[in-house]
Amino acid sequence: MSRHPLALLSSLYAAQGLPFGFFTLALPVLMREAGWSLTAIGLLQVLALPWLLKFLWAPWVDHHGARRTWLLGLQGASVVAALVLAALDLSPTHQGLLLAVLVFNLLAATQDIVTDGLAVRLLAARERGLANAIQVGAYRLGMILGGGGLLWLWARSDGRWVFVVMAALLALSTWPVWRMQEPTRPAHPQASDMALPHPTLGQLALGWWHRALTPGMLACAALVVCFRLGDQMVSSLITPFVSDQGASKETIALMKGAVGSGASLLGAVLGGLLMVRVNRRTAMLWTGLGQSLTFVLYLAIALGWGGMGWLWWATVAEGVVGTMATVALFALMMDASDPDHAGTDFTLLASVVVGVGSLGGVVGGLIGDAWGYAWAFGIGTVLSALGCVALVAWLDRRPTHARVAQAWR
Image (cartoon, rainbow, N blue to C red):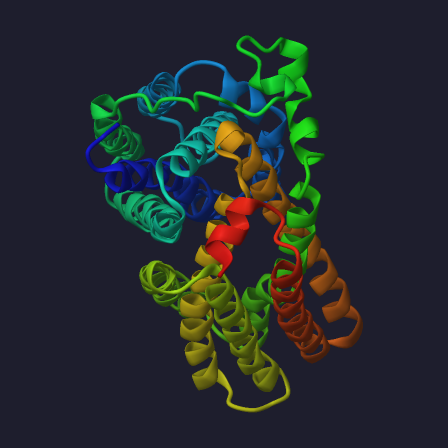
């Protein structure tokens, strides 16, 4: 293994965020300026389906081939794809860019399976909080470079140079992979279909189902839903709420882009430091309740208090504390992931996170349309706090795995 596994993980997570940031933050701006409809731009979200569905092929990736080989292949494919885009010199109106979005999402989502499995296998429980801080922070940094940096470059140069720079940055992030040594697999894996020396394609195809039914996994998934539902109800409404408060596009870009991203990076650092110093129970309880308290600011503004000045403070508070809560949750998800099936288990729980994000957005939107922002923020805040307390109370009585129990207290 690389002498610096955290440096390796940092480069891999940043490599995921780089193209994702360009295609989700920069490309919509370019498409809108080129005359694309909001509906067409909204369909970009559909092309992110590989991130939701990656659990389907996670068992095959997890148990087929070496992790170093997977990473080199996926990173190399991303570099080639970026160079192809540079050679084609596509304009923002070319539909070929939509195919590129799908390809990059598929490559990055698959790379995420391998990277998460690598992190679970390499790191002890005490190190996983720092690893998850790196996961969140490096991914966010990649998004900032891909979204803001490459958009700035596009505005000042030929579009093809954007993809040349993207290819160069992706190639640079591959360097630590060349130096890594393949981690050894456990000598005595647990008895299961996927733990066989040469599992069949059928066993791997249904591997996600077998892992979902292992003791404790469904309980973990339910706890993730409890912890995230209220949070996602509020979070999904923040940008339209800021817009409805009369903020200009430039103000929203500065507030949610520069300030919000900076607060998230700070939250990732603080979250990693916290996870090194306290147990999982303390981290989950205080970051979860702290996140709920930040939502009270949005509720107060919706009720007519504070105004625009409070929105800036709410953005910073939610960015810092919300990211710390995400770091704590991801560390708990790594604790719950079996090292023998690390990529599959963590991917299953990560897919639940993505799914509950969509569910929370729909529920928050329905409540907001029916009763207004104040009710949506109020209900979301209460559910967020209750979900945090429910998760802690459940794991206090019955930790889902021995690995969770070890890190919990």
